[in-house]
Image 1 (cartoon, protein in one colour):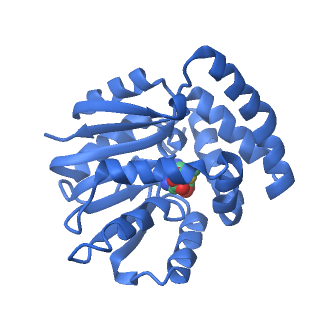
Image 2 (cartoon, helix red, strand yellow):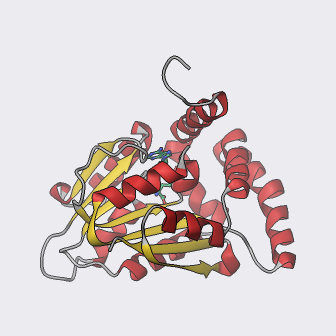
Length: 247
Ligand code: SAM
């Protein structure tokens, strides 16, 4: 195209993702609870336990949306000495605005959070500037996952840790069948009934199906240069946490 080398499909995907999160921003947090029966909170807690941060952890939370991971980080370190700081990066201003409202309601120290509207594929942050990079339920929405991984590697300092929480492949097959029935038949209906929107929730299900398996994604993370890459499945692989280090 005149604007670069994106194919029509790629341009369509980024437009669609933008529209989806613009549309769902105000109902996003409530819908997460409804669709996962609250379990997303446990998955996110597990991500924070895996990171086990201290106030010295300079955290960049990409696709941070309404702040769920960043706020967990601040809660996790609240009993420790030191202030801590987290940067939330997201491409969608509507999601960030919801996050800012939540931060005010939670009476968080506003100096401990920075909000940056930007693309995971092209971060405005300096190289080697963070000790941890998290991305929760974000990377499958990115058009070029390899570019986002390259950027994660660039902004982390040597020794820095990459952690990704994402929907993954359910095992065993019998459970996968049940999960498919739930996601294809129930989630879009719930989206329609509770949030008045069908399409964003249909997109959610489709994007989960298209995302690489645990092993394939591990290989992609290694290809970006990360070492000691591992993953752990949660809830039979409904989601997985992938971890890697920049060494
Ligand atoms: N991390 C939050 C959480 O776990 O609740 C939000 C996850 S939400 C499902 C996905 C987020 O990814 C949205 O806020 C969306 O705007 C953001 N996003 C999608 N594409 C992105 C991109 N290329 N760069 C940065 N953020 C992106």
